[in-house]
Length: 164
Image (cartoon, rainbow, N blue to C red; front, side, top):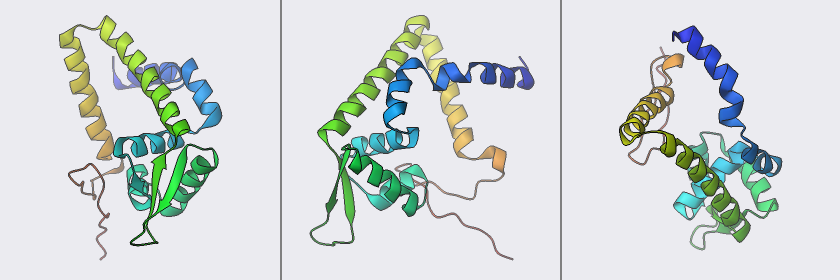
């Protein structure tokens, strides 16, 4: 299959990959960005707003809007630091934990289907290929040379722009 054929295959199948029936129920309540935000909070247990903005790669004003909707929906709680009132951290509520549990179960189900049809060697090949693809996509190869550096925790550093 050439690149044009691969592109057509992706377009023909993107709905199956990104919008399976199980996502529809979650999509009615939360955007995919909000789900990703909940996943980041879940993985860290507690996260400060600036770190969430970095994880989502969006400005603080956008992060505030996302957090506002998730707090209003009962998925997150805000906590102010006792030592520095400017620092706001986010934690999951019971509803947030239930939502993430459902999402993790759905993802586990998809992975179970995939592992059921692939041999151990094919699973390893899939992981290798997926890692290569994600690495290429996060480097922004389509956008040109990478001008960002990554921290050991996967977060991004400040973008450096040469001014002449």
